[in-house]
Image 1 (cartoon, chains in turn purple, blue, cyan):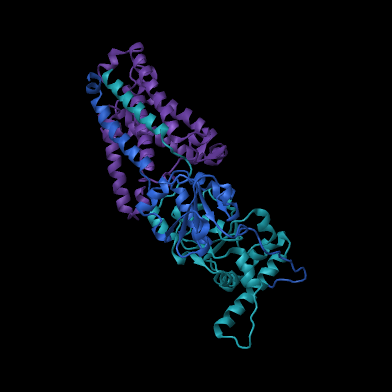
Image 2 (image 1 turned 45 degrees about the vertical axis):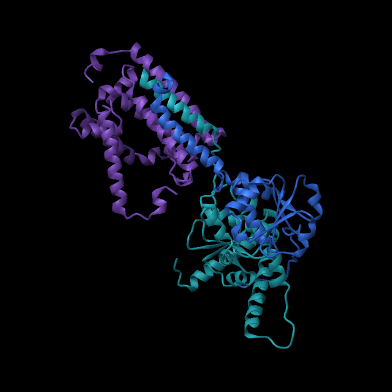
Length: 200
Length: 155
Length: 203
């Protein structure tokens, strides 16, 4: 029963090799979806190109469905899978900062790296900005650590908080996603910018 | 016909998954999800029954004698199966247990064995299983400890 | 439009199937039934009260004794050094928080034979292999360790060893359980520190 790391004690090089292969796969799929273009990514906020939400929502749902089915068939022990810890205030503040950076720069960290790998100059500047931010976070940590560690909720899951079965939660999420896909289509028609989308 | 052709890719993905899920769900011989739910009767102690109280259970009763047991239970006038504890999960036994409609009573000369088998069967999703025992007060403390207030422990 | 439609239908069907399944965020047994059965029918999952008595008097740090009874029963009397995890709360929090250390033998006990064996199957089902049961529970502990005596004129070497272990365990049990609650815990901690100092204060 997975995860793999609970079945086999992997030597560090194998761990890193698997990470490398997964990373390459991720970068490849981002690049072929066209996410190295900051105009495509910024389109999410202006409404003329909603590929981002479709791709990422799809990825999340496929992962959700896949992991729950694997757990159902006894192939994956979900209690051993890492769940991010939730700090409420820190998540909100960090999310706002990240969102502002995203819309201004037209990249998020992952897509920024894939754009960097094809040599885009705006991605290099974006990355420099990201590293500056990380440096500032570390240097000012004693000042912000109260905020960073406040309202800790632990590694909770939404279905646990709502008190519903994970399957029901996934179904509701899929309904929301499908509704979002159709809304996105409408938005693209409404906010169309053919001068940009024709070049993408 | 046209609809099936239109959605053939969708059907090709969803149908196998549906079949596998159904096989798994109704196939038996695996543990259920949510271990706490299936151990509820042990927490409430509603899964323990003594000889006198057998009459309170409705339905046709089946006694499973795990390993060497007491001769007395043979004369209880109920259907009796003698099964060594390590074969309790064999296909035909599980089939018999699954088909049986009324309460199932597990009996063993060792309480520990029937308690363990109860938990394994319950976690597999079988309901209406009881442990038949002579000692209904097994989990009650039979000793009163008298503190010795004069003694002083040495370090 | 076409792709989006098919995609949505596919996702919704899968979501619908998942919504109907008995999925749960709670823990479930991860070991396969036949394997679990052979594990729990193995005699090696038991320790006798004499063996536990020996662990207790030697303050064996590779052993953790877990009392499955209610907090009130635990407070009134318990095996020295044991921790209290009431059986009805066993699955409420992550059992790994006290069962995770592979180097420690975790020995469950309750008053009798039911709860400790339920807990054993549960722990083994969740793949915690270093879990065991004290056979007979606290009732057996009282019968054997606290209340037994030897009769007859001769005593064999083995009986003598048992007698010694039981006497020392009886003494320790009485001393610790006679302390008022506040002192019980401090005494056990102090014993750990004293033992460490004898070891040259190594961790």
